[in-house]
Length: 242
Image: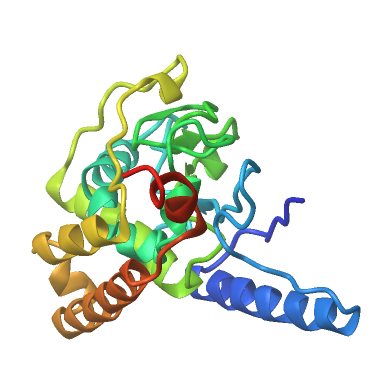
């Protein structure tokens, strides 16, 4: 089941996502059903994503800066994609914030991205440029899961694109084939993601130094708590065999 929210201001959209998730849970509970937004709630089943379509408009004219006057893709658009490719692995703790998030992004999962490749209408890539009219030119971040805090996930994705434009980061060539056949370039665990966020000094002034330290501490504590739990899989496969 896919829910689409109409495009608009980033903060307004984050409000809508937050209210939708809470509202759906309340409605479900009234029908004695529990709605979950875990990224990978069921084994051997597709996970739940929160795809973020992004475009940037001129503050004065309202024009989409991802296209030039002739309607073609602008350098800012390419640099924005370059920024996503360069920095998304460093903000994974914000767009894959829980230990369960990385089960959805595992290789051979059901339709979930495993890298930060990009392509035109290529749904196997982590970054997709949909077919659209010039004024609607945008890039879709397909990596974020449904378990995110929408405010942090949107802010993180925008921060990556912003740095790309400021640094004029050139993107890799678009992928036309199956991106699942390419290397995995995302952190594999929450611990890897937290360390990547702490190491990426370029992002700290944008996200806030105190926020990065506090958020990383909370996520690190969650990961350590997770390590204290012995799973049923470990008991089944290791208890009597090692």
